[in-house]
Amino acid sequence: MPRDTPTRWTKAELSAPRRQLLETMQRILFGRIEGLVVSNGEPVLTPKPRIVRDINLGTDSVQVPELDDYRLKRQVVELLAQLERIGDGVVKCLEIRHGLPFRLTLEDRFEGSG
Image (cartoon, rainbow, N blue to C red; front, side, top):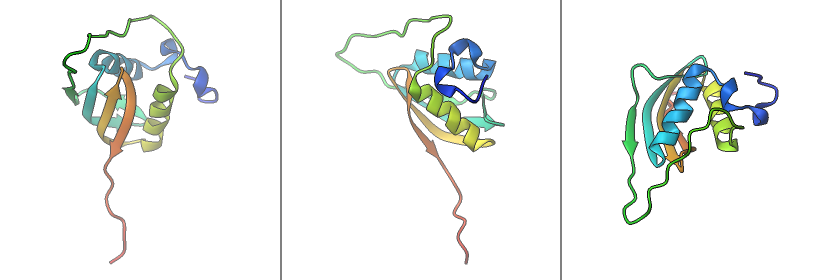
């Protein structure tokens, strides 16, 4: 995947783990992925992270159509950039809204002196 033009990435250019993460977010629609392991900037889906779905009552169910290839939305590009910055670690919680990443929660250790 070209790293110099991230806003022009398409689904087809993604690695298999990134594509699988994208498709998982689209299936979730609303909810979160907890305990997502990241290795060398790539999502690791084995062991499977915990998926928590939010089901909105009193609204029509909306499905994101599955397309073979398309340009990635800004939120997805930002998520992939964050995973690269993490390098190796664990995403405590990835919140999903409308099938897109909305909020990323990381846990760090306090590095103060004393």
